[in-house]
Length: 209
Image (tube, rainbow, N blue to C red; front, side, top):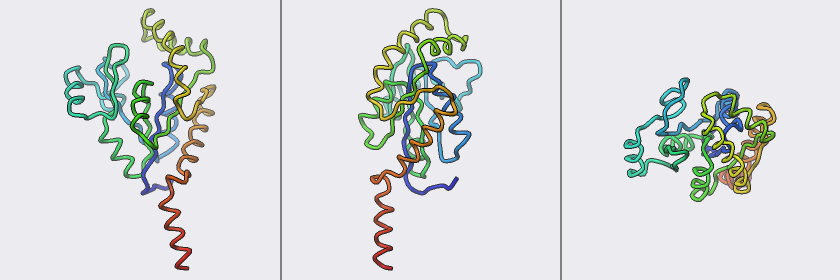
């Protein structure tokens, strides 16, 4: 795909645990070279397949709190007893080089970013049904019965926040969900307020011709 020197689009993706956000983001990154997935920082313990600096930056509570005091996060929140945050430097760097940046973050973090972002695009991923959501979380086999019920209960509450987002996508199949997000990216890159400089340049060209 052609690289652009124009500022990229900040794409914030949220949804309940088990909705398939990670799988969708991975497929998007495999299909497109104009996307950058922001790596979040967290104080939770890594799962066995997770790699520091790839899946998350795994920090101690003290390290995380130090970065908070230095204003190193675009947003941060405490979720299920652990801290999560989005380092701001890489996000700004990628946007300014024309990359579209995906933030796959929890709802608390997304709403904090929305308070301070004029041009972010906020997408909420929904499961096909609550029964399917419960099945997906159970199949992870990384949750205790207590945490499983807590996440499932939270999902009911989290879905109520969909009205705060620009777009809602039902993840019936990964292929369909990915195609819809690609359509959103294309539409957002064509918004007049994003391409007004190009329009002005074109007008100048018409005048000189």
